[in-house]
Amino acid sequence: MRYGLSRRAVMVGTGFGLATASRAANAAVAPAALIIAQGGLGDQSYNDLAFAGFQAALKATGIRGKPVESQQVVTQGEDILRRAADAGFGLIVDLEYSHGAVIGEIAREYPNTSFVILNQVVKGPNIASVLFQEQEGSYLAGALAGLVTTDTAIKGINAKPVIGVIGGTKSVGIDKFIVGYMQGARDMTPAVRVKVAYANNFGDPALGLQMAKAVFDEGADIIYQVAGGTGIGVIRAAKETGHYAIGVDTNQDGLAPGHVLTSMIKRTDLAVETVVRDYAAGKFPAGQTVTLGLKQNGVGLSPMQYTKALIPAAMLAKVEAARAAILDGKIKVWNVVEQGYPTFFK
Image 1 (spheres, rainbow, N blue to C red):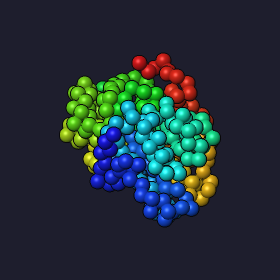
Image 2 (spheres, rainbow, N blue to C red; image 1 turned 30 degrees about the vertical axis):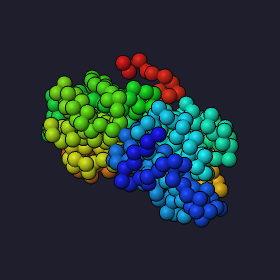
Image 3 (cartoon, rainbow, N blue to C red; image 1 turned 120 degrees about the vertical axis):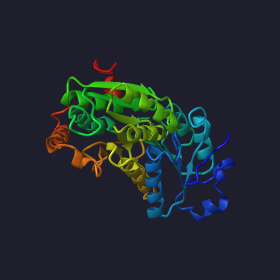
Image 4 (cartoon, helix red, strand yellow; image 1 turned 60 degrees about the vertical axis):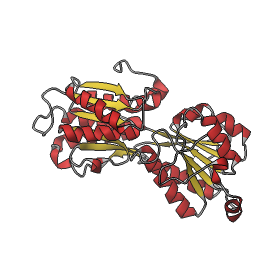
């Protein structure tokens, strides 16, 4: 198996390059591994934010750790997980959604190793699952987009209320974002049209650029990108066409100042840092599911540093009211993982 790592990752090879001397130096707490998802490090999104949290935890706790990145992360998930466990990592944090199908089996084979899977629940006495309520943050992004697309006084907004979203793959994990976004937009502007497309790729900015330009040409003036590194091309397209993108996972507002309406921040850094710290302290949440939503500040919108002044105060107030309504239970945001697909999603 060949592992292609970015400059910020540590090169790994047979046994993931974990030297015996390194294990001996940190015998009290076995080191941690972070398995990087599709799109790789350098995506300026999901993986990079999670890696930042991983690095922060290692620095704070003093334990050793390495990121693991493979060009075959989807097709060779079982082998990647088994090799990490064989290499002596005591904690394996997995960012790759597709590994949910195999991580339970591998965890049973290595009962003394702690595993973490993000974005889904996998049962096991040595597995911790981390769930984000992405639909809640996406609802707010959609609410904002649904309002802004109606105001032609805002530069770059077309006459008709049309917005878009580009997902990395067609999957419940990505559709969780998309359905929340659509619900928020429709609640604010029932007549809004939401164009949905999938790149089937998380690491191709050129493809994202091409797809976003096509969606803008079809009348959309705002596109939510839920496609990792591919979504960087969506942001570039917004800048080049004079329209708007909505970033995802991390604060991407500064990638094209004035053309990223907001970003739906998903605190993978907080999740990863927390589980690594808990592991180092002997408090690993084995067998538990950790949930991070609006209430836990696990998801939410960026401060809109470059665009807030463009948006009428009344619109911002409506988005804030929607946030409060979600928190107090007045607004129930659809969760496709738990509820299946709503009739408004086609």
